[in-house]
Length: 283
Image (cartoon, rainbow, N blue to C red):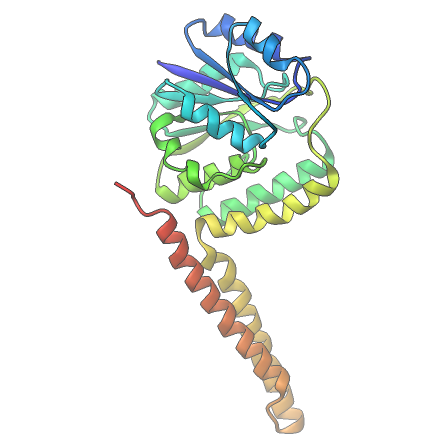
C-alpha cells in the first residue's frame, strides 16, 4: 500500500530521530513527513538526518495546522498520523493498515487502560467518548487519539473543518461519522512520551468545554439542544401545576421557562441546518 506517515513535531529533538528510524525499519518504502511547527531546538535537522522529508512552519501554528500541512503534502493514498514524541509504536501501523485494507476509511489507535497521561485526562477522555457515542450512536473507543490511519482523499474533504489547535482528532472523527464513512478502532498501548508535554492544565480546562460543544455541533446539534429544551419544558409545566394548585395563577417563572424551552429548541433546529450545510458535498 502506498502510504505517507505524517508526524507533527515541536521541540521533539529528544525523540524524533529514534521514532523515524523505527518507522523506516518497519516501512522502508513509506513517505515520512515531519512537519516542524516552529521548533526552537534542532528537531528539523535531526529529522532530516534520519531520512524524513521536513516541512517547517515559520512560527508555531498549532498541532492541527501541522496536520493540515502534512495532509496537503502527502502523496500516499493512505496517511498515517502519529506523535513524534515516542508514545506510539511504529509496529502498530501495520495493524491500522490491515483495517484500511478491509474497507474502513478511518482507523484509530484506541489507547487502553493505563495509557493515559494522567487520571484527569483519562476521566476527560472517558467523558468525550461517552458523549460521542451518544451523539453518533456508534461505540467511540478513543475520540482524542492522535494515532490514526485514513484514506487521503476522504480526509482532505474535511481540512477546512479542522482547527489549528489540539482538537483535530475529535473534529475529524466526528466529521467521518457525519459523512457516513466507515470508522473502526484498534487497541494500542501508548508509552510515556519523551521530553516535556505541550499540554497546560488551564488551557486544557478551557479546551475541555470547547470540545464538549464541538462534539455536539459537529455531528447533530439537535441531539444536544433537544434534551435541554424538554427538561425546561417539564420544569415549566411542573412549576405551573404547583402555582395553579396553590395560588390559582400563572407566574413569570413558568413563562420564562416555557420561553427558554422554545428558544433552545429553535437554536438547536437552526444549528442542525447550519451543520447540514457544512457537510454539503462540494462535488
